Structure formats: structure tokens, C-alpha cells
Length: 112
Length: 112
Image 1 (cartoon, each protein chain N blue to C red):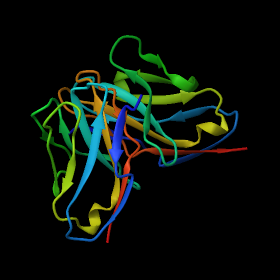
Image 2 (image 1 turned 30 degrees about the vertical axis):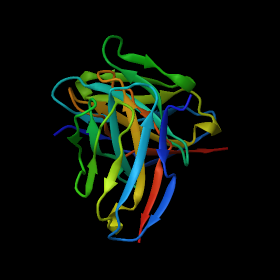
Image 3 (image 1 turned 180 degrees about the horizontal axis):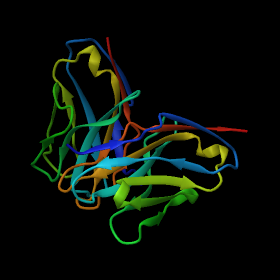
Image 4 (image 1 turned 90 degrees about the vertical axis):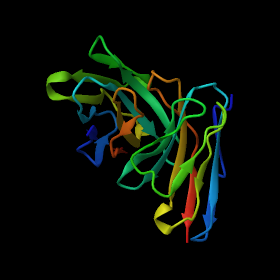
């Protein structure tokens, strides 16, 4: 069955430091890949998506993600984290013809 | 623009009672979804609808039913609520084939 794994439940980074959130998927073909962010008490917002083409995709708020087929990964990165980036981040995949399947999420805390 | 509207935003319900969570979108998206979000489990798909008149089961459909009489509305019904259905429920929509979901603000349901 298709699945999405986010190995890190909780990550704390210092403000201004770089960030990488990991995501691995299990699927036979290359699915559509997404990263969403959820601020406390709110719904989810799309950060970026990968369908095909350039494996490095840029998103909103200075985030980027790189698709690596050989590793079945789609890790999210940001060069310099801001306190406002503290939130929960979800990786998601869309296997063909079905709905989004989400990972369990990674909570990001930002220390000053 | 409203996007996705969910109601109620919060509800406390006695076990055994029925409840319908409402969801309306004004984006004319053909696909709609219901997810539940639980701590440590991420978002899990309950039911989905790829187009008006059709519905499908997600990862955790038991105890829930949906209907899709028209494009805009996608209500979720709990026929006889149980405490394990205490959760935050998110409705979402997308233009089928894009995979990009637009989420409502969520409905927090507590079953006692």
C-alpha cells in the first residue's frame, strides 16, 4: 500500500539556522508530491508541489524541496528559519486516481 | 472569497446521537474530501468524492457516511457517534487531477 513517512516527529531549530524536514514515500511510480503547513488552530496551506520536471521546486515563504527518485524522498528545506515558521508540516502524496495521503507530520519549534 | 466553509466550528455531542458536519465550497472544484486529524496520527482520509453523484471510501470510513448531491456541498454524517470519533474534521476540495487541496478551517467534535 502507498504510504508516506516523516521520520521526525518534532524538530527544534534556532532562529536563523537552516532547516531540513524529511519525507519518504512508498509507491511504485512517481506520485504527485506536496508539502503543507498548518499553523496552530488553522487549516492546512500548500507550501509547494512536485508533479514532474525539475526536481528542485520552490514554494512560498522561502521553502524549497528536492525530489530524489533513487531515495523515494521529497525533503523540505529552508536556508534560514524565522520564528513565524513554527508550525506543523505535512508531506503528502497523490497516488494515481486517488486522494491525498498524508504523513503523520513534523512539528517545528523555533528557538531564539 | 469564502473558499471552503465548514459548520459547526465546534460541537459537543453525546454518544449515540447523530451529527452532520456541513461543508460548502464556492470554487466549483469537482473533488471534495473529508479528513480527520488526531494527535500523532496526522490527517486520515474518511471519504472522498471525485465528482457530484459519486463518493468513495478512504482510510477510515467506518461510522461515517457522505453524500454529494451537487458540486458545492459535501456533508459528513455520523449516524451514532462514539467517543473514538472525537477529533478535528477537515473538509477540502480540489480540481481533480491537480492534487492541490484547499482546506476549510476545521470542525472540532467532542463525543462524550
